[in-house]
Each structure stands twice: as C-alpha cells, then as structure tokens.
Image (cartoon, one colour):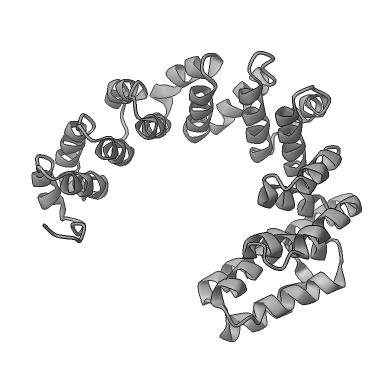
Length: 331
C-alpha cells in the first residue's frame, strides 16, 4: 500500500476515478474535476454529480465545492439534498454551492435566513452575501436584531460591519445596551468596522479578559482610542505571546503614535526569521502606518518577498489616497 496520497489526476483520469474503490482517488477526482477545460466541463459536471452521493463525507464535500465552478439552477436539487447531510462539513459546502448558484437560489436562502436553527441561518447569510450582496444588506438590516436568537443577531451585527452598512449604525448603537454580552461585543466590533468608537469600552474589557485577542486588537487599533493604550501595552509586553498577536498590539500602539512601538516594528522588519518579518509587515499594513513606509521600502530590497512587500506598499498607498480624498472633501 502506498504511503503517499495520489497526485492530482488529469481530467481524463479523474473521470475514471469517479468509480475508484480507494477513497483518496475519488477525493482527488472530486477536486480535479472542478478545474476542467471547456471541452470537458459537461463530463466533469456529470462525474461530480455522482460524487456528491459518495459514501465518504470528504468526497461529498469536495464534489459540492467543485460543482460551484459550474453553477446552474439544475443544481438546486443536489444542494438542497446536501443541506440535510449528517456531516456539517458537507452542509457547509452545500451552502457554498447555493451561493455560487446565485439568483435561482435566492428564494431558498431567504427562507432559511428568516427562521430556524442559528447555524443554518448563519450559513445562509454567508451564501446570500456571495449570491446577492445588495440584497443581503437589505435582508440583514431588516432582520437585525432578532430578539429570539441572540447568536444569529451577533452574526448579523458582524456581517453588517463587514459590509460597511452605515444604515445599521442606529440599530448597532441600540445593541450596545442589550443584556447579552455576545451581541454587545459583536455590535462594538461592527461599529469599529464602521469607524465608530462607541463600543470601545466593551472591546477594551474584552482584550483585558484575553478573549478573541487578534480580532479585538484589529478593532481597537483601527479606532485609535487612547483609552486602549494600557490594555494594548499589556499584550505587547508579553514576550512569549504568539508573534502575530504581539505584532498587532505593537501596530495598534504605533497607530496611536507610540514611538517605542514604531521602533519595535522597525526591528521586526529587520528580524533574522523571515516569518517575523512577514508578520510585522502585515501588522503595518493592517493599521496603515504611513510612518513606516520607508522601512518597508528598505526591507523590500533585501528582506521581504517582493510580492508581499508590493502588497503592503499598495495598501499604504490606498490608505494615503483615501486620506487625501477625505481631506479634500472637508475643505
């Protein structure tokens, strides 16, 4: 028996492997058939429709994901059947397929979104964003908050923030005063995504409890509230914290103008280990720290991969341009 997994097969081999006895071969076929040339797409689709009924859940999941490359209303039946699968990984993939199908799936997604189990409603919400972002905005706004489902309400709050839905601000501000901590913190995160600091106190308390640290660091760093400095320093000072966590804390402090943190990030760009240099660069981009642009440019010459350095510099350029546009509109 081979100890190595099969290599990615050609489309022709994958079509034969649809009926293979070995699970690994069928799984590889399910992945490969999602990338068929135009001349083989119909055959690939037929093969995938067989694999979505496979006995193994990993094969079923891979086949559903690959079918997303060939969306069509005829796949609604297969996606609907897979929603009832006993394996949650297959259910996730079924909702991904509904999102890829698009307009023909909107009625079904809206129905699931309207009520039922929170986990399914959250999956439907994600699929709706993929299928029809503008409709998703309106539906989320209309459904938020759901007094009977605080978990779903918290997910909706985060989605409204991710979508930069400013119409949700009054409702999110009201949610800061609700009894449930999960909803209050989700509303605070959403408001931070919208540039509003009314929930900063909740986020500082969350960071002090060491909960969802990276997510909270990003939110507080973007808000640039001085009240967060002690909590940010407490995270940054833990020398054996995960590298990303410490770099984000330093980035949030640097965004507030902390010179010591700026210098720590400069040293991070010169670190011996490539992973630390890359993590530092991502923190600089996350908080758009223009003061460190010359240091990123210097690191790009010798110490950072060119593609990474270019993406960081483009992020800083976009930040500078948006700041100039905002300044011009205020004059």
